[in-house]
Image (cartoon, rainbow, N blue to C red; front, side, top):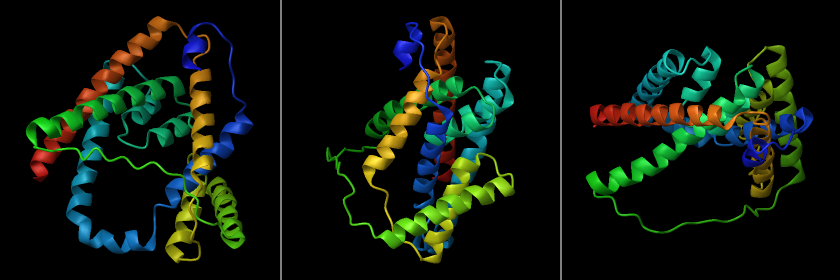
Length: 246
C-alpha cells in the first residue's frame, strides 16, 4: 500500500474497520498480564527498575532530537520515540492527532536498526551463538463459549469504561485493561487464534500504507533519515543502560 500510494494510487481504509482491529491488539496485550506475571514482579524489581530508567532515557533523548532537529510536533515525537510496542504507538497516533505516517516510518526504521544491530553486536562482543531454531505455529487450542463471552465482556466493558474515564485511545487501552483485569482475577483462560491477530495487523498495516496517499517521495526520504538517527540514538542509550546495569 505504501508503494502504491507513493506511485499515485488513491487508497483508503474506513475508520469503522480500523477501530475493532485496535481492540483486538489491545485485548492481545491484556492477555499477557496474568496472575503468575504479577506474582513474579517482586522478584524482578532490579531489572524492572533498570528497564524503566532505559525507557525514560530513550523517550526523553529521542523526543528531544525529533522536536529540535526533525521539527515534529510533541505528540508525533513522543509516539515515534517510544521503544517497543510499535503497533500500539501507531494505533495511538490515529487516536491522538499525531502524524501516523511519520510515527509508522520512524518506528519501522527504529525497529530495523534494532533488529540488525543487536544480534550482530551480541555475536561480535558477547560470544552469542544463535541456535537457528524458529518455531512458527498457529494457536489451535479449543476455545470455550464462556471464555469468548467473558472476553467480549472485557473488551466492550473496558472500552466503555475508558470512554467514561476519558482514557487516551479507549479503543486500544480499554480492551487491554478489561482483559488484563479478567486475567488477573483468574476468571478467563483464553488465547486469541493467530489468524485473528494476523487479520488485525493486516488491516492496521493497510491503513498505514494507505495514509501515504498524496505524500511526496522526498518527504518520506527525510523521515526515513530521521528514523535512522532515532534508531541509532535509542540503541546507544540502551547499550549505555546495559553497561551500567551490568
